Length: 319
Image 1 (tube, rainbow, N blue to C red):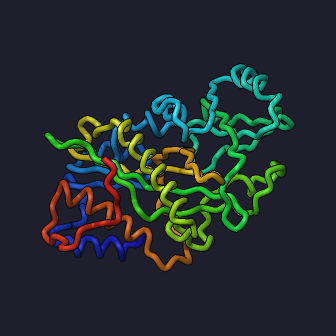
Image 2 (image 1 turned 180 degrees about the vertical axis):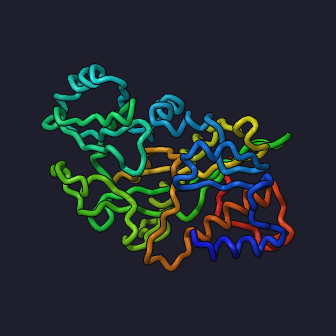
């Protein structure tokens, strides 16, 4: 996010001043490599954009499935810690003709993902960086855009409670659509660019509201998305790290896929979001997201001198 955008936010608030080393800041916002650096957790503030490890019930894939239980929007998934457990799962699945997605339990940004069938199960590579892995059923009937697979990235904001106020959850209404690089051919499992959809900076800017679905199908998608978001909000039980901050919040990424029948499937709930936007996008995604995030969090806990007259409507209240 450019310094120009950040400086503009400071100016608009009226009473915001950049922190100088030596005194305790009111607000700390960490992202990218700074979010993952535990050394930054020692800095105390009144407000911080990280909630405690209670979030792990959803951000760790095995915990997500255990916490949410047997939901129709969750793909069949097996988890294992050791190669012996993998071999047991392999024996169960080896006779099936369908494909499976193999990935680390705590991986992100597509790291370590492999597409497997009974022909190449023996080629599984276990990255020693990770301690747990999972096999997730491959969605064989994905909805396609221009012949390519895709997934939705919904940004989910969780604001912890303070004093007598309960925690609240919201989702960002601008939902990016990330396409696979190549057109879908189910039988070609050697080419991951067909089967795995990732963020690509040079992809044409595409959002959920751009997709030409019928009113009926779009209504079905949004209805199922709301069910998933409410379940996530009900089960995200987190607060602030003790001694770290009195008030806190965090932004998460929810990855969803849609089938040909317009059923919505929950793939992951991520804590490492990353501010990524399409380079050819006329819509200022990052700027809009950051301003909206601050309106819901900083302005709520630490009211600015210059209060906005218009109401922020970029986030949808969940619970």
